[in-house]
Length: 383
Image 1 (cartoon, rainbow, N blue to C red):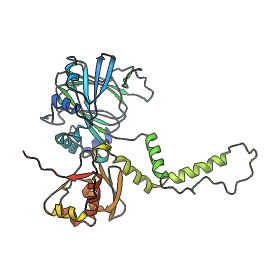
Image 2: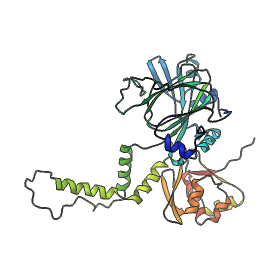
Image 3: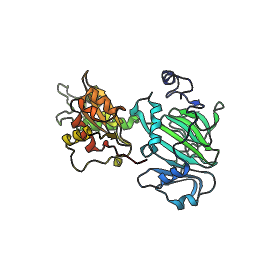
Image 4: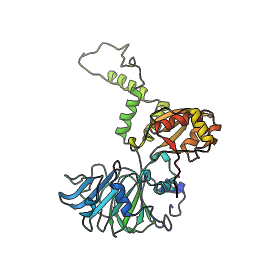
């Protein structure tokens, strides 16, 4: 899938550094859904979808937000528009299965798989994303042009609901048409333009989350603030009389700086916050919590009778060892301490069946995750 590179070579030479075009990354690829099915998802309540029209009725690069209906698609022209549907992996299991191909990257870094459809000329304009993305061609053809890495101050077109670059020039012959199964990796900050070349163009975008510095600082400060005692304050015992009572001198600033840095510099608390923030679900309302608490004994009985639990679509799990025996299991923005084997099993791909009950504390933790909506009972479907 990485064009002959090992995962270690890809991470060393390309990840977050430069683009990589991979012809035939997925051999004989068959897209898990077609344009009509994608349009059907865009008509459903609760699914994030956008329609981008290059020449809209209200002006260029018009953006509309779903849910849509049949009349919306009936009025569209034969070219120059794009439909984008977020988190399709949350709704289509066959799309979610594609994420297994990216297990050489931390699972908690994954965001979602967005799928876009566009007739000829369909595009969202030249732009920059602040995250890593693998662009996998599902159906038809799309032309990709790259304009090199640009800074945060790159000018964008005013007055539209898209961050389209004012200036875009193709760099170093980075101009390709991708066929089904071809894939293009782009690191953050790389300007690019994708334009549909066919009437059946479907592109799958596997994106990776990364909090910005301002988001991280604000979030971590809020996390710490909920736990700090009110007595932890600025202090200046032993100071000398000020030459000018109105001056905010260097010593005062140094004392305040010391208080902040000492408070923030707590690796254990940072890890607990980081695990929670990186497992927060993309759509909180997708998690359906139980109205009544689950009885662990009833859960044990159900598992022993052959029933199975499954991880809810859109749920995120991760773990961090506390010592050789214990760990914190992070699930959908929360954390619970448990045995290390149990945390690994729940955050991994292990079946959630009666065998988990051999691990101490499994029944209680499974019940809590079921109540929170992170897990659900497997529903058998008739073929």
